[in-house]
Image (cartoon, rainbow, N blue to C red; front, top):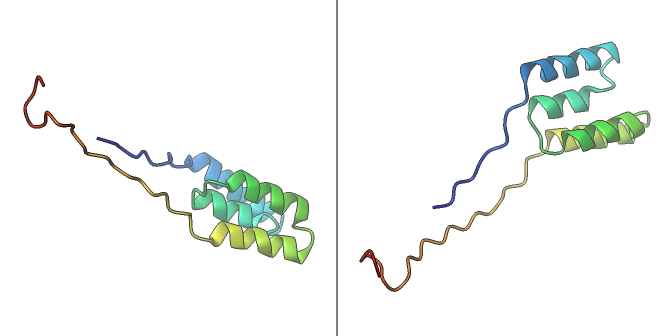
Length: 91
């Protein structure tokens, strides 16, 4: 049986820190705070794009779209084939 583990949630302290940074920077780091709150898998990349390219309005909008976009879904294939001896144990 295959089990898919979800990404662990972001700690509350990190989320609060992200929103404090967004407030101090007058919402400049808002896309990063949104990404952290939504537990995006690429929150570090969103933070870097926002920090380095957010000074241009286009870079800020791109990072906000990255933060608000949907998370790509993974395809999980479970193979339950038991072999020719199934259901007889010991074969």
